[in-house]
Image (cartoon, rainbow, N blue to C red):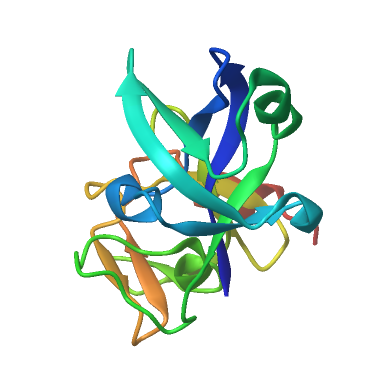
Length: 178
């Protein structure tokens, strides 16, 4: 299975470095020198990381064969991907790949089913689970321990402890057509 670990931004300087929007919790491993990254679009890569550094809070990478600003700028917008085993689990029990969360049944702490996780959004402030109920309505659930206290991959469920109004379950019941 292919996972997106980053997106190439603009060129930095004149020697082929690019900024990278990091989309992984393990950038030290994913972007280590010598790492080979697949790309989307595929014809651009694969790219081999030559060097990496942090400058003013941004990750800068250089790739083998990309030696000047023009070559670096041609990579702008390219997604960086890695191949992982679909069953691979991360070492930290509180970290998950998106594909592991999508499809899980979302239940409240009392066991009442709310819906299924249909998507994981990576927003600037935090990650958000998109939970779709049986009627196709979506709720955006912040993926934080206070609201999602349990993720059980083996049981295929996430437990939600939503604050009042987050899911609007009462309102949904009242407005459902007869």
